[in-house]
Amino acid sequence: MEELIWKHVVLNAKKYGKPNEKAVIGKILAESPELRKNAKEVLERIKAVIHEFENLDDARKKELYALYSEEKSGEKQDQGLPPLKNAEKGKVVMRFAPNPNGPPTIGSARGIVVNDEYAKMYGGRLILRFDDTDPRTKRPMIEAYDWYLEDAEWLGAKVHQVVYASRRIDLYYDYAVKLIEMGHAYVCRCARDEFKRYKDAGLPCPHRERSVEENLEDWERMLDGTYGEGEAVLRIKTDMAHKDPAVRDWVAFRIIDSDHPLVGARYRVYPTLDFESAVEDHELGVTHILRGKDLADSEKRQRYIYEYFGWEYPVVRLWGRVKIHEFGKFSTSTLRKDIESGKYSGWDDPALPTVRALRRRGFRAEAIRNFLLSLGVGENDVSVSLKNLYAENRKIVDGEAKRFFFVWKPVKLEMDGLDGEVEVNLPVHPSRDMGVRTLRVSRVIYITEDDYRNFSGKEVRLKGFCNIRIENRKAVYLGDDIESAKKGRNIIHWLPEGQVIGGEVITPEGTVQGLFESNAVDAEGEVVQFERYAFCRIERAGERITAVYTHP
Image (cartoon, rainbow, N blue to C red; front, side, top):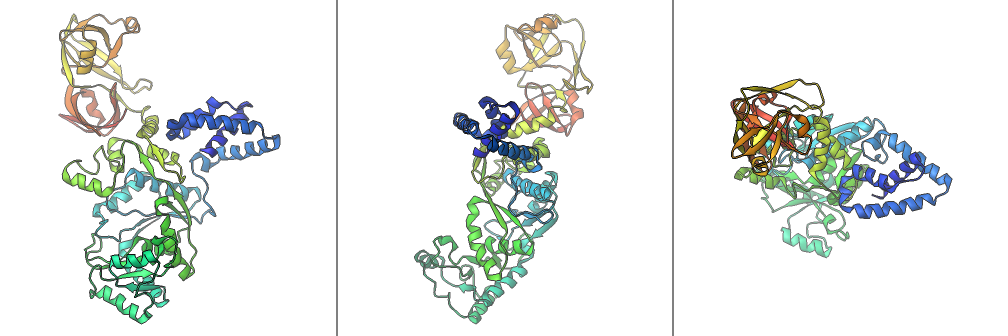
């Protein structure tokens, strides 16, 4: 926040001579909407920074003007991403390494988009690596492999190489043997609770100092099935007195007697994520890693392997979690159980935080990218609302979405005082020339139950048509004078009998039944705006219409 405040104070001062606190806070909240909840605190800090700035000498002010002007015009600043440490043009290699135990969520999309953006900024490469070496606890879904590739492409990511860790286990075995032979790894046959007592006390277990030959023999027994699950693990020697117990002689390989969705029963000894990832980052030439701050211990553990082999560890940038208010806490495994139980219709259920769900709802990839890049890559956890994503998507779809009427909970009204059939022409879009849509009205119209209840006994205007008074299930015609409609009459939407199609809108909260304007049939697959309701994507159109809620 501090850097953001200084940037906008300086830019505002350069443009207007004297920084204005209201203008500055407007820019800051637009760039970082999550700060709105602390607006008073932000404003107080802005006032303090303005005071500090105004007391600087002219030379220092000029330095700041130059600094922030360059940032403002630079590509990196435009994307909201700070430069990578020790990054060289053309030599940066980023990696996104998901466990495909479900489709990409909005959190996964952040990893895809930001890693891709950095690769593009530096003319580098992006590797999509599936860290899929846990066939049980985080068992991969065979469909999820393709889902990640499809969603990454849809999000505009350029993936230069795809790697499947489960297909490279022989490579990890080779490194395991090398470490054993170097005396840096050993087979431990302690029970888990027994080793924990040694670890907590900072003491070596009885197996730690056995000979290389004994460890190689036990390693073969792990591979050939002599040892069962839980009877032996391969550990990396670190420092049993290390201040962080999680670093002390960590597990590199364990026995898991489960088939794997991708490689079947070929293996029974699987590497842990820390071992597999450490080897792969070196093998693939990864230069920079974006890693959740909750995984900071991974670097402490992996550095032992890098030191043993004399490798150079990649540059790591830790970043905080992103919490989206509307989704709360969730895990892929929990979502999977909820889908299997019938709570959700599938991985693309509009209530879910998956990319597949957002695609189904009609969000544009560009909007999702802009939203995720706006969150930055700081270490602080970010709490943000979907309203920010809605705003990004609305910028794109508002200018091109066709307009139609949708009447939910319809109430039927008899038109009283209207002679014959009237043809009403309405614009397909309010500000762009996209043609007109025609509604033909005679004796019956439909309005929403809410409008009927709120405006019974009152005068309203049917949008684009005429003025009426609602009374006793009738719509009393009061003429077409639009000037009178401008004098405080409420404007409501409506549909004529004969040009309605039944159907539903699938929303994150449930399904809303109603009547659709028949003209909407031709917009199947498009995001449209149902006036006074929401933007929606028309999923199916025919004898019935099914639309999926996008956003307000």
